[in-house]
Image 1 (cartoon, each protein chain N blue to C red):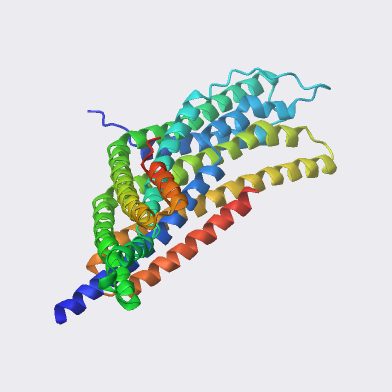
Image 2: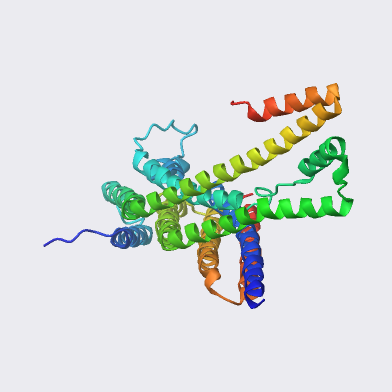
Length: 132
Length: 286
């Protein structure tokens, strides 16, 4: 029964193709003068195919690796969401505490009958409670 | 008394560990973003070092023929998108760890509140006559009551999330390392071989004089140097990922270790190493 190829298997096959290409290039270089045009063309065709095959296998190994770790990537994305929710919650708490201070400041301004401070206090509260 | 000392120790340890998480997460975020910026994508390998593209370099006609070779780089680009997802996932995770552990996030200052209440009290209830000392104490108590439980809750939550995701993170990082170390290094080997097969071998065989051969060799050396820089960048990226993985693990399990100073020292060393590696990668990319 044929077992499924792993990303490491793909890399191993790709490396074999790269080595084969290297050997074939070495052969062509050693016998460059004695080969005719047709032989050169055949070698070039073989080299192109080996190069394309190896390049694709390296790239395909990434897709296979990604497929294997996809559930864990999703888990990490879930953790990121958890952190984002916590960040949002902490920011909200901070906003509420700041609002309490702003209300106390307004109350102080009202008690002092300081009109300028009342206006700036109201502005401040409106700014803090504004929903963008 | 003993319980109070233990509680105080645990509290201090949790604050310090959050600070360490923040510093570590900041470096990890920058490092992961730098890996993404510096990486020579699969699509680029396909576009620049495809046989059809390289053959143009050996075109001896007076005006090089325009190339419309049928290069299908879609699969390579798909791999780049997947690598992008992995990088983005890690970058988002560490950047949020950094944001949540930021000391400015939980830094409520009760001073404006107490000052306003102090002012109101002096006008409405002058008979109470709170001393400045009492007001300062009130500010301190309020700051502690409002900030500290949240800080402890945050430290607990951070450790919980880090612990729960430590093994998933390790596998994702190892996968990323595999992609850089095997698949991407493989593409570099392949690009080098393509240059030899489709450029160097031809030009070398065609060149007659030693001067021509020296020129062909010099161009080949330039190409090798470019590829070696890429290899070095990948090796440094892999080392950085390995350091990030180890540092995260250390911080995730740190709460179980009594000797926090040791942990903090190790984390500081990791942060220094990550920052050095970032500098090296930037230097190699320029």
